[in-house]
Structure formats: C-alpha cells, structure tokens
Image (cartoon, rainbow, N blue to C red; front, side):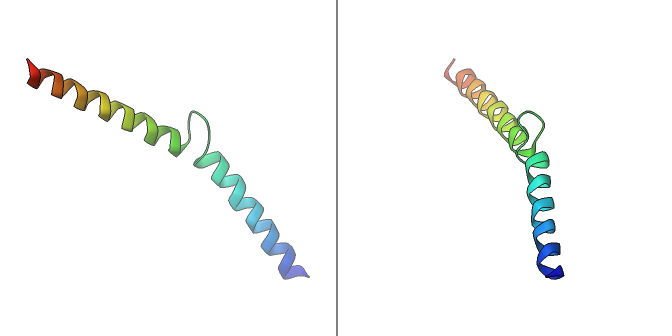
Length: 53
C-alpha cells in the first residue's frame, strides 16, 4: 500500500512540474519555443523579401 501511495504522489509531482515548467502560458518552455519559431519565421520572411528587391 505504501508503494502505491509513493507512486501516486510522484506522478502528481511530475504532472505539477510539467504544468509549471513546460505548459505555463507565457513563461513555459512551449511558449518560448513558439516565440522563437515566430521570430525565425519573421526573419526568414524578411530575408526573402530582401531577395525579391
């Protein structure tokens, strides 16, 4: 019974850490990756516009 309780508590901790580190709305890793991807797309678009001129 004790092992099951420890396992469940560890799963809860992992879920809480995932939500606070990875999936946080503005400060999480997912948001930062999206922001960097958007910045890269913008820069690539600007480079392509410069080539068209």
